[in-house]
Amino acid sequence: MLWLSPLLACVACSAGNDKEGSPSNLGVDGGPTADGSVSGFDANDPDAPYDPDAACAARSFSGKKLPLTIAIVFDTSSSMSTGGRMTTAQAGLKKAFSAPKFDDVAVALFRFGVIEGLSGCNSDTKPFFDPAPLKDARAALFAKIDSLAPSGATPTFSGLNAGYAWLGPKISTKTPPLDGKVAVILVTDGAPTCGVDSVAEYVALVKKGRAATIDTFVIGLPGSGEVIKDDPEGTHSSVLLTKIAAAGTDLANLPKGCATDPKPVSAPVTNPCYFDLQKDGLSVDTLSNALDAIRKAATSCEYALPATDAKYDTGNPGVVVVDGAGAAKTLARCVDPAAPPPDGCWDWADAAKTRVKIFGAACATVKTDEAARVDVLLQCRAK
Image 1: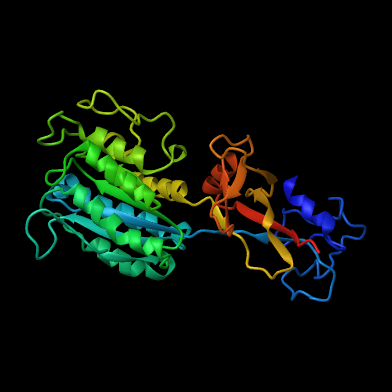
Image 2: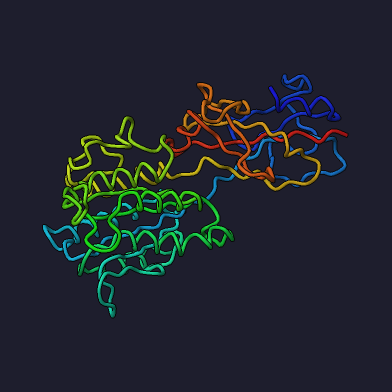
């Protein structure tokens, strides 16, 4: 295995274990030490201060997953007053965000429609609610959700564009909490009724968002099954929404076999790439479940390497995925991240080699298994 080679040059190296289920007690030949002891720190207390005068010891650390921010771009047009859509959507948002699994997720809220004090088709140019981790911000966010009121038209393009424009610069400067993974969720109940109607322009906009490392997901509420007004091709709104969703994130995050380029454009999409609550029905549970599914899909498969002293070689880590049952799989370095081996693989996520990204089945495990983790084994630097 690639990550074992530096160990051979290390003096009296053996391995510790910060997490149950991760590699431990590796000797110079990769086997267990004679007595299970670990040079340099107490094997029974791996968080004890390291003794700089002791022999070098390999050590396993927990990789730190990049934080997640979700920005809801929410349709507040007048049609949201139909059939209880607004009140159901408000309750669905609050149910999803009440779950403890959202505690460390930062959530922002943008609106599009008629905004107070403005006329015509408008959207928020800054968040209606600034992104903040929900463990500290639930009550404030829920108050904003409760205040949402339907009015006006549906300027979907300007709503998305405003969200990207505000988020992008802060992502580029790693302004917390926008210093990790960021996803936009478009929640709408219909086709655009003002502003830009061209499907190609929407797709180009969403691709610009991806270039700024923003993934985009879509939830279509009842009312989204209609033809786009004044569109010369008679494009059905489900075609627009599925193309936005298909352009907005990795194929692995989309429903398997969804229609990324549906034809004909004038007909409803039978296997869309977005959450179609026109077809599945809008309820508190269906919206809450859609938001939780997006949380899992948007979860990063990137992990920051631990901050350590110069004794450890962070340039040649061992990367181990441990599922919720404690089963550990050591990943090989990717030959081709687009075609990972059955267990998955890892590669560097940045040029400075401060983060690793895992691919394939291993990435699916950390997205879907709430108790899964990634451990990083660091060997001693060669003397």
